[in-house]
Image (cartoon, rainbow, N blue to C red; front, side, top):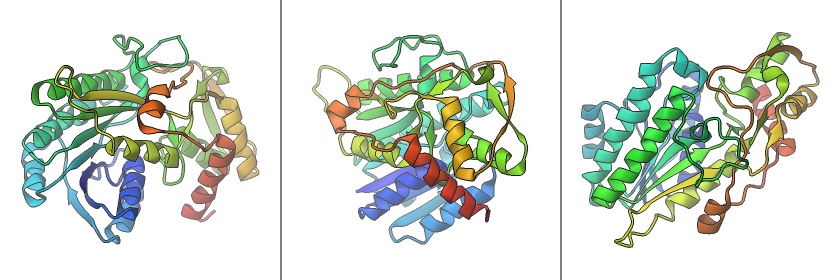
Length: 326
């Protein structure tokens, strides 16, 4: 199998590429290496991938049709697509909205067109987000819940991507699967996400920002479980019955909503240091609680997360200390 992985130097893309390489697949990695967060971290991930047989890299913006056309021409025979490139971050979407429509909407369209022109395409998998559930109060969040009222531009672009995937499956019979990720954490994680931000601030003796006065819950999902879900989905494209589009959506979460304060407490314990808290109100576009109903992906793919935060946080902190020479 030859798999195109976009966002290959990113957090989930890096781990997904490694897993594919470990099982002998050929991986075409694409990333624009932008400076949304420290490019040095992306480069370190990429250097490890570049050292692996079977990995090829192209530095490109997925919304650049000419650049992605060159990638397609140079790499015939791609059978699977995993689109993990995106402009992430709910709060940042308030500051740089155009970055979100370019990466999450235009970029996805370019890739769908790339897959449409490729007769070897067996499955197109793309990242969505739990943010599409907006201010839904029914828990756990189910893929059957209405998602027509996004409360952030980030969520709106991700929901747009789901609709585009469905349209291409309907029109061109491309098997597509959208994955609604729930708060991913673990080694090599993004510096703008909670675990990294908290660990960095605590070690620096700086206060951590805790929104909604700490009354928050998240379905924290460890990276290894996420990757197992992504690859399990890739291996199981939706069938084309001829009556409905070969399109699916899945939640990928830990199926367990954890208190934010408990999450922070584990980080404090692993670091052997106490945090200074700066409690703040709920931020625009944010939600109080997330909790994934994963019954659909369990049924179809056999997805079964195994890592709870009591195990995952120590692993993340061990990596964090090593990476930062703490």
